[in-house]
Length: 348
Image (tube, rainbow, N blue to C red; front, side, top):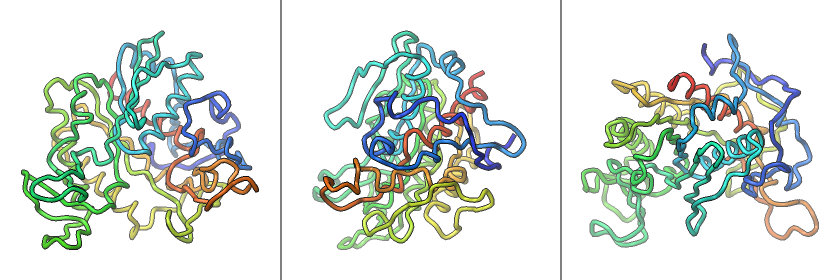
């Protein structure tokens, strides 16, 4: 069955949790608490054309993950994804997970469900590869240096613990970077003042994805399942994040609408598909492709409701729209339906 061909259909059941029953929602993604006036975006489910995508089955999830560890590695959208899973599990299991670790910036966090000895963690690694702003290779501090053939030690150091590893990245590649391979500066993305080739971020993205997906199964001590979660689209209209872009839609796009071929989303997703489909062997490596189905959900973002009551008299400051991250609950919960279905296919 092709899970990717289908449409969003109305769903009277809705989410299994709410913002009132889950306290693991990042403030900027807690859309109803922040005053979003509509809630229709929560009452849709993805229906493939020729089959059903099973709703998230907590019993099955725990059967697969009892005594194990799941890690989300990526940027703030990976955290967004992980928090939706936390909400689903804590509601269904009637158990509050215990936070057993967090760093000072709350970027690396670990939660434990004691009754089933299940752990879920998130690691901040927006490139998946090693990146530093520190002085290195004769280049002064302040310039971002991205090593295309070195996995990020932030998560690599924990590789033997992971039973299911969910990898995602993308948006941070648009930033200025100097690119290194074999400890040699080979090019950059937008590097004024440096006499080197501007290879562009697509090049770096492809190289890192190839390195991660090829090398990961070979790593000593890694016996788990690695899942590449595909690129998450944004829905800014009439501008971007920093110049007035907004997302005011309240219903999904028509199912026949496709991602514009001249968009960043299209190209980033194309690179992911080409790299994954080109793997000689895909043992213990899978892909959960959420890009097109998420593209059809322009209604699922916080928009101005990334802040509490942004249009009230008490709100001070510029009303910033977030058309990148996802409201919780919302379309992001379907990602976990797809993750669990992938786990079922790979682990049973």
